[in-house]
Image (cartoon, rainbow, N blue to C red; front, side, top):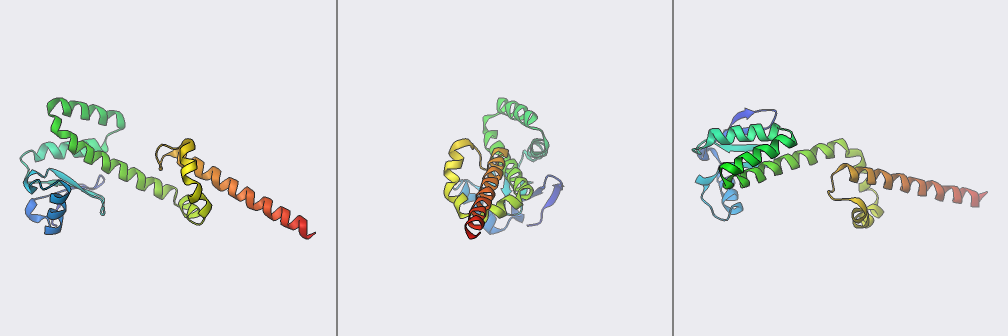
Amino acid sequence: MSCRIIDEILNIQSCSIADLSQETKDQFIKQFNGDGIETLTLFYDKKNDIVVLNRDNKDYDFYELTATTYIGAADETRKEIKKQAREINECFSETFSILDQVIKNREIELLKKKYWREFFLIGEQTNFWKQKDVLKAIDIVDEYDSTYMKLTSAYNWGYIQGVRAARARKNKAVE
């Protein structure tokens, strides 16, 4: 795929339909229930974390401006952009759902990098995974929000305290 970089920081590129591999074209057609590839405006390559815009689309300039502005904007600005675009035409909702998915995936990856140690430690604790649904029911809406990390830290602290108490009992029994 020979693409032109639009924004290196936001990972946005553009290419023409002819530049897409047959595998990518087939994936697009399958994903959108057989709609023609000529309707493609943009798509998200999750594997490489890249938003790809269709250079052949007649409204390419609009979609380029929308993608670069929307992804780089704050939450309140995104809501306003969405509201204004829906007033123009309701068909933009699919574009915004793709861009929202891009933003959510990038936020999750950022949290995974930030809390890699906690995820590594949890991976070793089978009891946590057994109790995960109970812990979620107590306080969690989204698995990757800050509440989840706080709850994970609390669980780790409790686990460590339990291990310490067990050691203390064992040492006391030995003496």
